[in-house]
Length: 176
Ligand code: 5GP
Image (cartoon, rainbow, N blue to C red; front, side, top):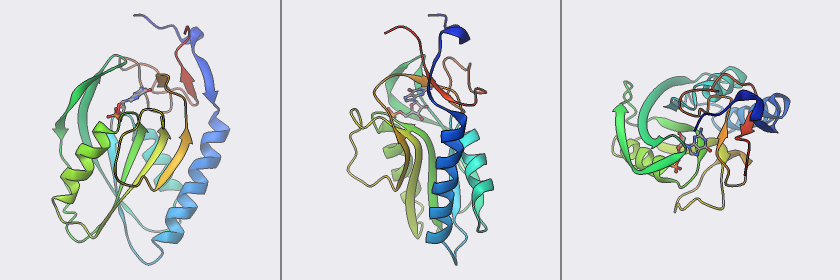
């Protein structure tokens, strides 16, 4: 399916995203006041959220990335594959996983379990978007930017077949 930029429907504006990112960054900064947490961004989708989030934080932090694949087009393939592991040693560290969107929860479960194997001091999760109607997880998501209906969305890092990551708001694909 070819998707035209003109057919996208904005559901969250750039301004709303930035306000929420700053609120979450303040909250994280207060919670980890005397610590240096390490944020682990999940590539590719979270690269813009992670960069805005770290710049809005008022404490020192480190950042690293992990890359997995589970989606093709708008469909989950049902299994998660590791494509790039983290480089940092997270043993005994406070880790914050930075996700773009939690849909079924498969990706975040896989990454959380993988990072817990390295025995960090703590693991928290921040996601910009969550589709609560679909998610099936048995652990806390500590910060959720926005809960959204179960539509496929693009923009602010999120793609449709690698396009639209550079849009500043969040959009759903046109049509039904
Ligand atoms: P889950 O494993 O929770 O089903 O899906 C999480 C991953 O699937 C996200 O990191 C993202 O890469 C992709 N994903 C899930 N829903 C969407 C969506 O609506 N739009 C885009 N662009 N990616 C999505």
